[in-house]
Length: 308
Image 1 (cartoon, rainbow, N blue to C red):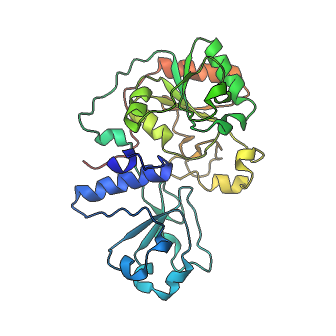
Image 2: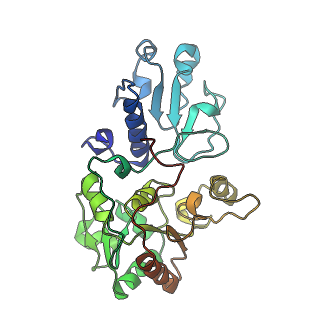
Image 3: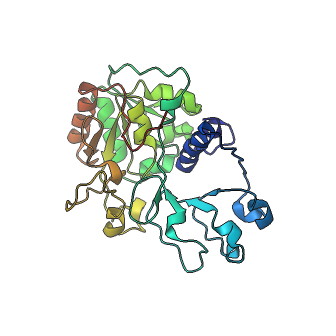
């Protein structure tokens, strides 16, 4: 996973997915070239030499209307799925890739990098009362007024809480004083840290990321906060748009969608996912205790595994 682990990587969800694609191509002998420049900065003549062109983020590239020999090769990743191209787009919705199965775009998928790590060992399923707060930037922890008090309640209940926040360290990223900070971990060190955790807990944002899948691979459950359309983290979304990304592989037909930080996995259930109301501190603590009690060593959903 050198593409994701190198120092130049942003370590974003999009980079995580593309690292999986890079690995898969190399397994079957496909020559892969990586360009840090945006696709718009590369000439059509240069791009035409490639069989496929993968771009991070949905940009419509209207200039490509004049270059169908390039347009047909473009595949662009939209992490949140169900993206319908506008009239200015020179390609259709099937050329947009999604990390999850959904209605309009093409399912690309991804897998936890730990599953293909050299000398991989299955983590010990037994864990203490330790949890990891997911989020690298401090503002995420302030968006829901119930989040920090929920973390404090976990600490007061005897849990050791960890964070990988990278900023505002002088005030502990706005988190309670008892949180153990890890501000400069490599991807490998981050994976090792997760292997000590009984659970990961989100702050309600960012929505949709590889974090729960990485946690499962290392034996950590996901505490999945409920969100609402009134939530500032989702100010540009309606309940319909949030429901549109629930992915049929997790939500049986004709059921109401549970809208959470990670809606696609809301219906997976214990011991892998515990949906929690951050305002109900007792239920958060109860979910954390269940994550400690009902242990698993490693889990990968069948749709999110590498073919080895």
